[in-house]
Amino acid sequence: MMLEGIRLLLEPEYEVVAAVADGMELVEVAARLRPDMALVDVSMPVLDGIEATRQLATVSPDTRVLVLSFHRQASWVQAAFEAGAWGYLAKTSAAGEIERAVRAVSTGQFYISPGVTRALVAPTAPAASTAESPSPAKPGGLTEREVEVVRLVGEGLPNKEIASALRISVTTVRTHLSNAYEKLGKETRVELALFAAREMGAGR
Image (cartoon, rainbow, N blue to C red; front, top):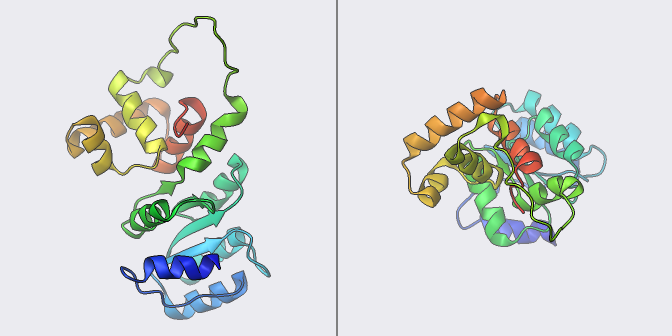
């Protein structure tokens, strides 16, 4: 039912070239058709979504993978990206978010569902307190604007939307991101997004 719903959602804008029943079939079909993008269910039978994503990187290296999953633990997210995924989307996502995720990944941007980033920070979120607490220090020596940019990366926003939200240019966003990568010792947008989720409360 979910598969058919996604197909109906995407077909007005994208050509759906195949739908498969398990991970092994996915790898075989992708090797033959070389699709631009694949939506991969983590819980597929025969070959799970993480291993299927890893094999896709070999048989169809230009295929960008968007993983769909009920799992929101950091270990699953990390495993998906290490296997070669471009995006990680919660199965409970609404139609609008599915469209945003597909559009982001299809244009070469990484995507992490805000619902997933909320789950990543929930276990370490401090308990609510009525006592006054000091303002938290900015992580890694980031400026206030760099913090805002990194937090929005953690929300899954692309540079253009970050620029619009903060009323700055896309070039300025890239400059802030470059500074953040250097200060935080991160190399990819995914690492930055996961950092934002864990350390800055992105997605809450």
